[in-house]
Length: 104
Image: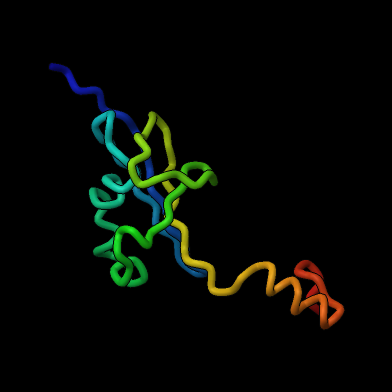
């Protein structure tokens, strides 16, 4: 039986540093399997502290489930947890007479 391989990548970004790995995997590989294969959890302190079920993944800015099956050219993104609720941030800025794009 011939297995088909596909080209995919996985990315993670912090404010001052980014990681990107391009990989060739078997068709049928899931998004969470790619994360494990990439070994980024071993390299990145922020990911080491999270359990798989806490990690949110996406493909081209669209959130996907861990069992999403990758397609040729997919870019899996590992999303960081929000540090503040965006609605609350906008509410607090509004109280100060400011907006997100105009914080001066």
